Picture 1 (cartoon, rainbow, N blue to C red):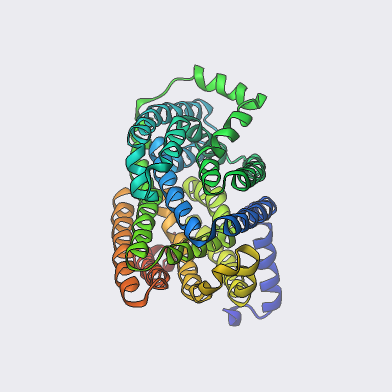
Picture 2 (picture 1 turned 120 degrees about the horizontal axis):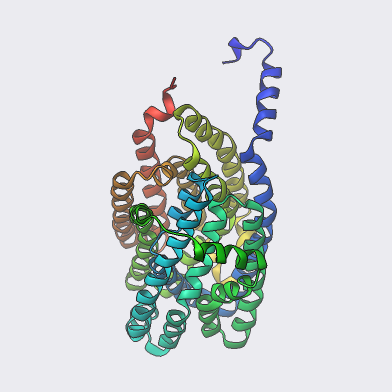
Length: 438
């Protein structure tokens, strides 16, 4: 490449300058400020939980967190990403956008009532299966009763994201994180594990109640109420929700099963280590995944030209992969300090979990840069097949690795599964990556 450009220093300088001026970088930079605050709150929250709950308590909290993720997406009809995609796609067409927003909230109301009733009616069952005691059934009743507000908050955030109001999205996310941290700390210190579960069950509902008093939101709500909905919008949203079901529900289901494997074949402490390494992973990848969800998905959705799509994907790789590698390197080098700072002495035995988890995280991000196209372009069949296959393979690999290698086998399985997923994405999108279009 440099042979074609004799003044290669100037060539690199010009291209690097273009990269820095791109919207991708601008959004990433602004998001990083808000994400930095959320990272601090995540660290503080994890530390409080580790000190007050220990590995066993953290494992149970992980089970409930996965359940919330499943029920939440069911309560919104799993249309969050669909709402974001189609709002971005119809940029400039306000009547169409208002119809999409109204349809999204109608779906959320219907689905929330159904999932809320299921959660409350079977509260004893969920408590026994997930938390090994019916003593926590009241937590599920509390969660089921507030699920409508919970889903409204997430639909509202999807709308803001789809309208590409990045600044507002980050401000609300930041405020939510700070208030959520204070709320969680207060409940955990007062009630221990029960307090942590209550905080998980109600924090986002409280945020929506506070947020709904915004005058701009109330004004937009009146416009949405008066708008009309084209029935084809429901079809588009539900087609998209099929993909989201596998994207955001399949993994929490797999994690619940994997924790059960750890509990059956190892110990509750191993289950806690598995939850801890996943929490660390979530914390340090937040900057990257936030940029992908806030900027990357809406941007890919709005691009129809294949050359521009290819260019956007390659720009993503040029920026995201080097950042990911640096981030993962520092986390690995500082793993002992991370355990001491984020958790407690009782978690020191999980140091060996870091390398396989970091390898898996690298392949996860590398594969997501390609896999997001399936969401952005509504490639329903391909998405469902790949997500379904790799969710099943994660469960099977975890079962095999946990039985053969102990608790650390759970992260061995994670690394193997995402490396296979990455190479599958490379194969499926080989033409788009390697081919230049007219």
